[in-house]
Image (cartoon, rainbow, N blue to C red):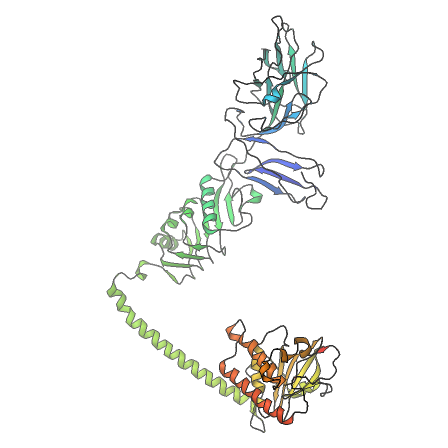
Length: 634
């Protein structure tokens, strides 16, 4: 039942498959109707797949799946599958199933104007036939109202080409007198099925068609014989439609091999469900199969598992794919040796083992096939793999014979590479110093630093700040100006000429801020280091100044200092702490860089103390406090 479980108010349509064959389409008339599909199926193996196939008409769904086993000789026909067409209790009673029915069959009431006969006694109390219809079902029977008239039942299939097997269950529910007789003939579509039939008292007797029947309108007629004093009766009936499952499943050996491979490597491909090769439209990803005819099972001839995350050794299950032509296991993490059994796959013409971690020798038979052209063999990208057994040392003497020269060669190569690296390093430094940098008038190296941030020349800084028009703040390092870069606001911190340790602090500042990544600290965009002009360019952040945003710095500083500290130095130490706590080791500063930063903070504190003009050591000097957040000047 759909029940509008997905809220779409659209009943889906989909196909129901049993194994590799279409069982029946599923069409729901409305949201509340219950659709039940039932089939009697002879299992060809120890497992079966029930598949819901999407037809792009809504998402397939299943409310319940029940399986019951019955004896092989109960519904015995030459056909593999019998779909339920009708199952009636021939009286207007309630629906019955388990625990009333041994096989959990659902018996639907049949509504008619016929005469109802019933008993309160138990049917089949001491014995039963193989069909075992529910006793409560067999307690009731129908007969024609006119005793001289035949009992007639009809049904019309949706497809007039459909063929059916009919099973009729009879039991006498009345204790007949000596002068009473109930005898009748049974016809199905005008063909005599049973003549002179007399039902047993309180015991089920089942009569069925031995051949399939089918018409546009099917008819069962039960007529009393000339000897009968009572009209005919019938208690229950089952009608099954033949479903000719013509599509054979994939060869069982191939199926078993693929299931083992799937389990061994934990392959998670979405459509690796059901039969590997059929139905053709739903075959497994990466497989190609040979479909000969309806009398021959499909065989797997190509398997592509490249880049499928396979780990471990090549499993022996591959040896059971005896019809395979192409096998691609490249770009996985397979280890161990290349197994000999791959050479025994007589139909194999392409084998790709590239990009794994295989080791040892390639089997000689595989190499022979590769040389004579019968096999395209690829095995590159396996560092531990070699072409012949000669790559495997056999004695200690042989091993020691090449270890000494090998070690000597490696050491010599390492020495050469180290010297080459040192030469290139000093050459590059000298070239960079000669070309990119120069000494300023006070002896400080200027120009681009060896840092992966954008370098601005001084004229660009002047343009960005509109000739340093708007001051945002001021501190021991210098002033902070408002600027515009590519349409976005930025904050430009300019090194003051009075800063005694300006260049060292400037470089350390750039290197440190490259490492700091924190939601409450602005990011460094670029820098200027031209002559005596040194500037840092930051993101511009709104919603208040940094002190407002992070809170009063005095709240996290050791109270024993009694407020005797410089705010810029406190924030500097905070930045250093954040950098030291970075997850990546590459983002954490070295101890020498930390010491340099701390020294600069001490020097700045001394300078600020000498030139301090404010009684509040914590307060940040700002201008224009209207919801702006900017880096504070140091």
